[in-house]
Image (cartoon, rainbow, N blue to C red):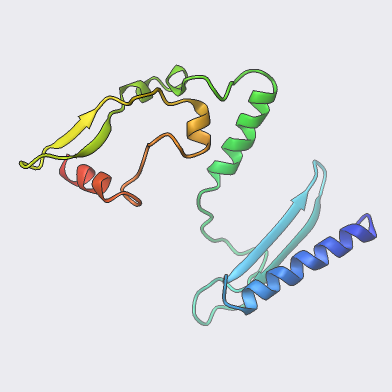
Length: 150
């Protein structure tokens, strides 16, 4: 490491990661930092999260979900900084299908979905702050029913 301050921060990170693993809060923690030329830090703490698993190794492969969100957010932040995107622009200007989305308000007595037009257009800001109203069947039972029946 290039400074004593960095060593202290890495020691604190490793201690916190080890404490999280020891408490059972997470099965493992992997950390890595790199610049354009080399890996500056790499460490794996804990196990694969499978009963009887051996200690995690930096060569182990495992599922890493939802990583498109931070990558997309970072890329969008760069485009916003460059003036190529605006958080208040309508999302449909980039993805036209968004303009055709309806709001599911429920189901009638016959079980048919009741849909209405949105009261405002979805803007990029809404997508990045998860306030667009777009939902999935995982979090919304009405959407699960709609997907199952349509």
